Amino acid sequence: MANNYPKLHNAAWPGVVGKGGDSEPIIALDTLLRLTANAEVDGVKFDGIDLFITAPHFDIDSDKDAVKRMSDHIASYGLKVGSFVAPIWGGAGGGSAMGSAEDRKRFVEQVRKACAIGQQMRDLGIRPTGGIRIDSSVGVEAWDKNPEGNTKLIAQTFSEAADIAEDYDEFLVAEGEICWGGMHSWREMVKLLEMVGRPGVVGYQADMAHSMLYTLGYNAENDRILPKDYDWADKATLDAAYRKVADALRPWTMDFHVAQNDGTVFGSGDHEKTGRHCQVDDPNGRLDIAKHAGYWLRDRDGNLTKRMRHICWDGCMFPNSVMESQDTWNKVLGAMIKVREAHGWSE
Image 1: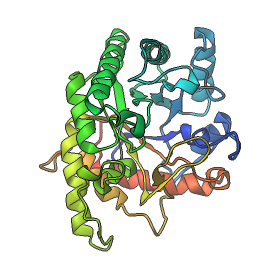
Image 2: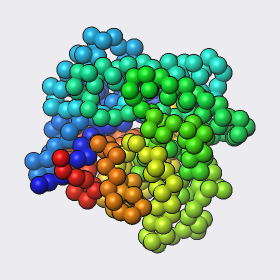
Image 3: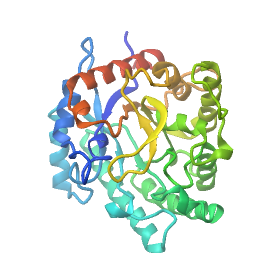
């Protein structure tokens, strides 16, 4: 019998991240739902979609009637809902996790709103799996002015958010990405999670591509693992470096994004520079997607963890012409299926 877990999800936020303003237009949620639902490879389709809980996709201030309408709408495409991205940033109604008391209060309130929507969707049966994604909502330069004190503040904010999440029977996942202060290196990420100290409630969201950037020491030269003169043809050295990152963060990992990366950094719109996602079949992609996914989905001994009930594709800041092509999502689905064939299970 073919593996049917983890469930395969697409992500809605690439239609928003890096879009709008002077960049390309935001891609409507309905467009992404249609492309996701229509993707098919040898009779296999996406099981669901992960959502960005922000307008114009899905307003975090939606009332219960609006949440019910959105749930019914997504269900009409034959899709379930998984993880959320909570808009915890200052420009989206939140605030810095290491900012003023008011900033941190707004941060936690955004988490509360996302958790309430998540709980309602679980009750409605549309959302069987998934956590709430957060980050520190601050850049590395600001964090670096007082590393110890700022990490303590971020940990305090995450702990307060964890109390809220527990009330709603939700969990929070911190995105490891080089643009977020206090989370911009693998060592700092582990340190922060240990300081929060809420395993099972606050964990790590491993994006394959962003996590790979940790090996190169962007924004954290002291935590670089790969040598400065690293030759990408040396696959064994990359494997060892990447495994070191995965071994450190896997015990905390509660949400997983399949992705590809060319080892460079990029930003568009008002998004800070971060790992450059590239297309699944990009010849410059540095990852062996199915192989390196196993670094997160299996333990040190090669045993399946079965911790992630669903996995999600993440590909932000692609041109709209790429994202609005059905062929893009068929290729993505094909890669996701290979990950599940290699590291999935059947129930």
